[in-house]
Image (cartoon, rainbow, N blue to C red; front, side, top):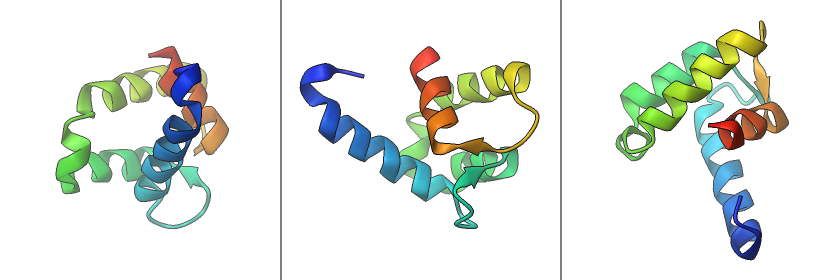
Length: 77
């Protein structure tokens, strides 16, 4: 994350996470990520990044991602 823009970046990431978290559980599963990519034109612009998150997730996690885990995966891409 850019330190000079951290507040707005964090807000944007929280908004993205909430948009993807369609069941409101506070965690993302693979279906929510994939559905978000297919159903939201804004997210199509981020498809390569989210695909990389899915790849990292497959290697490092077995269950749903919390917001903090999502951020970590996003930053590692």
